[in-house]
Image (tube, rainbow, N blue to C red):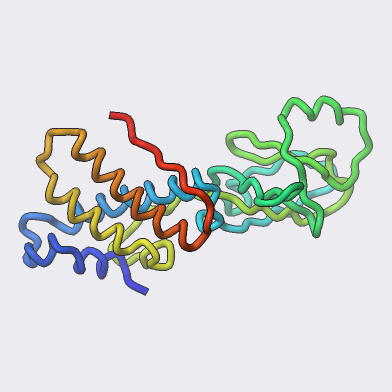
Length: 214
């Protein structure tokens, strides 16, 4: 798989500037990061499973809430909603947990502990209801924040979007001194169109185009 450095070296702007005097790697790396983050957001908006990863949390008898930071899920953004009826992104064994509001915990104050059937989210943790009566393994399929790229980092998305990212880098680098925000908006729209074209082929659901605010 190509590294970020490989991807930058393959761009047209690097071909035009092999000595890196006009466009330093740091500048192109910043543009690459923007494109990766934007594509990740597109995938999340489409509820595409490509933008997810699997995390597990060991539930403990008598404990209702579990911090993401304590369970190697510091990159958590949102739970995958599932793609079928009664399917969610959270399960214990073969039982899916239903999402609920945090206020529902009031209904369980005096209830017996047992295997959780519902979950709720806070900004830093996931809670389960009812409170566990023993140890369980909670599986969480969740949308994650893309990590900060470095030149030696392997390109994300298994290289699927490398062409789209390269084209975006070329366009943004060439428009570095562009003052017309509408042109920059068009570059993001073009990146979105290319990304959706790829994801539509991989996961054939109807795409929803979004225009960035000017």
